[in-house]
Image 1 (tube, one colour):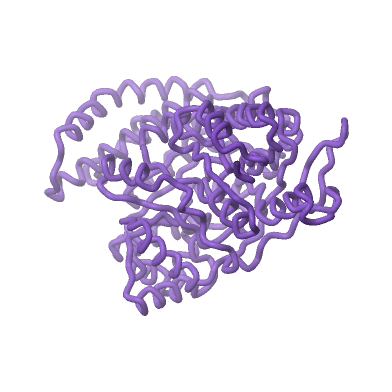
Image 2: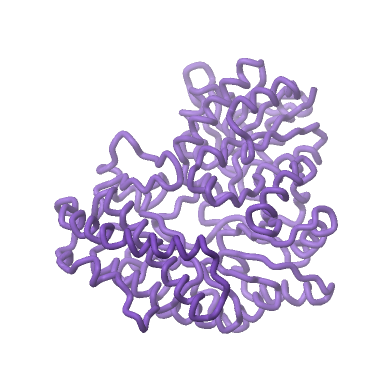
Length: 505
């Protein structure tokens, strides 16, 4: 028997898009919580849903571990948990029920549970941790186990039921000294299972790290149920120490820094690079950043010197009108310039693109596609505007929401409100933009004399064969937009708007 069985409900197998990509990372936030509670004197075990086949394996883990507390602690560093996907919510509900059937005290933490704590309490959870969870969980278990005499209603960051009444206590301040946290409990993870998948599918082994918690910017569509607008960072030296520790113990070939914004503090990245040079340590990594912050003096060079190989930025739109409406705080020209600088430093660039924001017209879509063609990012990710509780965007469109208010899986792409165009329009748009982008990458590789596999050649010709029909469908769908929600600028055909000319290939 153990004190705590930690788990989470993000099953990679339940998300077809991510299952196809097959780039699994263990639940970092869950590992932090496990490490924190183990440091507090509790025995812990992990159920890792990322590589599990179904919820039945959670039941098997409950039966073998026989925990007193079953803690479904979602990985708050995994952006997919912020999307509050219905398939993963249903998994969490079933996992709560399974644990209750076995007599466990059930505790849940995560973005969806923070937003919908009453729903989780009604589906078997005894307690929901609101916001950042480590300190609240430790204090709660101390009270429940009798290690400390503390009334539940005085524990900050907690929701629970007292009879028919739901109690929610005041919000707990976030942990500010992140260096004081123990490193994640990587020993609980089946590292070799992850290594085997990465090596077979991608030829290298990647692990995940985080240097910060939160984001202080105010993009009005971005849900922040865990940290809100607050932002705390680890010291560069503490991060370097963990990188060396990971390399010595688990030998990753690559790291993914999962921060919302890497190196936000002025001079942080330069200090980070300096400390890596001092210990002569370097490992390739990818990270997420902002276009305006990347233009700070020496930022790109410090990333290069640190070992960064690709930076993903939230470009979102090629229309300044849409960026302003989003309250993004960036300029189109900054996206172009930072892409030029990163490429000059031999760092690849990924663009996150978002379609479907209120007021978007075909002209705005064309500007986004023009930005992709001219800036030439090395990769793109596409989504549509998705209203989540706690955002200005949600408040603006909540009266338009129907019974379904969350996506089922990550590539659902359903317009949850009366957006500029229909759900089918954006799903077709998603397919077409990806096909055109991959086709341009194929042509660029050929012109650069790089080796091309037969599979890539066949895929290219498949794209060229299917694109005309896709553009025709999109033109038809563009004429049937939601009434009252669309700009009048919809007359131009899709082909003229999106097909690159030869000189832009």
